[in-house]
Length: 343
Image (cartoon, rainbow, N blue to C red; front, side, top):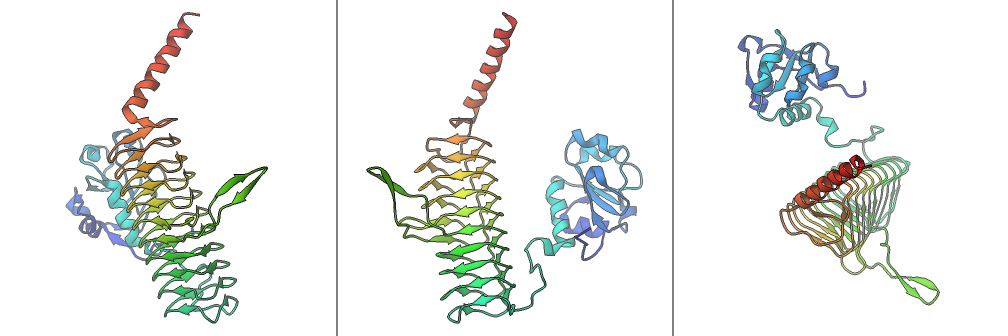
């Protein structure tokens, strides 16, 4: 309804683009007009299946073509082009980027071409060429913004430097931050507000000044309504290529490595360090000053109270090594069944 493909592709072109093997050479010229889910396909669409448990959807499939592993080929109805793939999801995504390239990087919602007359831009701001700034955006003094960046409606930028080909979403705010190139900050993101630091003094709480900044390296993406606090004395850092979901809280002084994945509703307390290529499931909470190694995986809804070495998988509350957690859960379930049988 909202997203129309920019082009059409033949099955032969899809095979060439992905490296998938076309099972029926005589269907090479079949045209794919758009993409669809396996259970919601119509004529002219490309779909994908990757597991045997999905084979029931194939019995009544209506589509132009399907990406699937070798084991599902015989279940596909006659007349549908079969593209044999060792990774159908990846290849489907590759074709999606070809057909819908404008969905990868957000664009101006209102078609602004240049600087809106309804934006408030301080005279001292330094703006490179080909920047789009939408109505209601506020650009403060001494802000620097690189070429090709889009600042969406009602965004507020203060005391910051933003690189090239970035996107700052509607209603987002950025302050005291250094942002690299090709960074996407979605709607409502808050970057650089002061951290949660207080000291008990007699009968009240005294605020600790937050004197650091936020550093976001190249190719980072941060989802809607996520908050990243600036550091107290040193910087809060998010490493190159990391992807952070919606509604995540990243506290002051946190250092996140390169190419990490952090799912929605995670909370990372102050001064934590997370290594490269680590992954946090939804609703993970990490206590302050913890050190999480590189290539660590933490299961959803886990509560991390201890440091985690490189390459380990942890889960549970409190989090512990994954196999240990699974054994404990299994033993608890067995004990519950025995107790019920003795009543």
